[in-house]
Image (cartoon, rainbow, N blue to C red; front, side):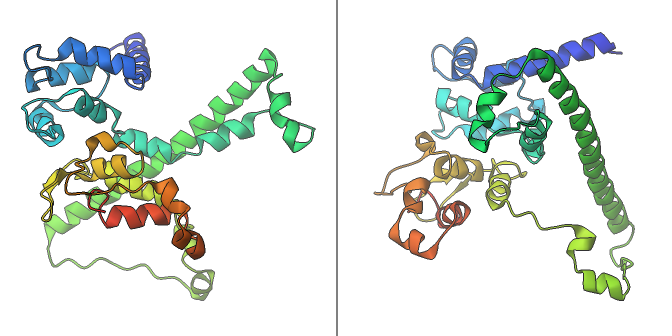
Length: 287
């Protein structure tokens, strides 16, 4: 059994690997170390070790499928652009952590500044080590509590899913018992029972394109015969990663920030998420 010291060391190594895979130089060095010299690509036999060195976890049984889905030019391996795109794809855990209020947590833990709002950062820059230690202690305490609550919610979601799956397997005609409330529940509305709606549409769209099980499943379009997947569409449209795009047939890739300034968008008072939706759901590669 792995000791506590070994577990900590493994987690520290994972943290260091995370910094490395966000540094393009480390990704380039990894690619050079594992690529096939003759073909100048990473083959299936080397892809697993290459990803593991950057702490990107892909099950051994999925390596061939991952390579096939990411090999855009069908040369039997991943070139550097394809490999770096795979490495930079957020994991489901990263997407989950993005929903945590970490920015607000850190900001709230900073000392209160008795000064004009425009001078707050100047005062913050003079924070002493003792004050910083106090803030970090507060952050640790609140972060632990936040993670405990969110993990409990996550576990309950999966427990509910498992219970539902078990119920469905027992009887395809089983009817779920409905829960009702009283008159006050009716007047309080849905928000009092299920919470306020999630209004960060851009994050929701990103999760839809980058985190779901089919986000990296490739398909071929019926019009221009372009091979693509939802994760690539998001990278091209929102992140501006045009190296993944097939620019043939005179197609033009729309720039989100430029489109926001278009007269029609300005008159309609469109928000960024709405412009992204317009471009994405009409096909970023087919505009």
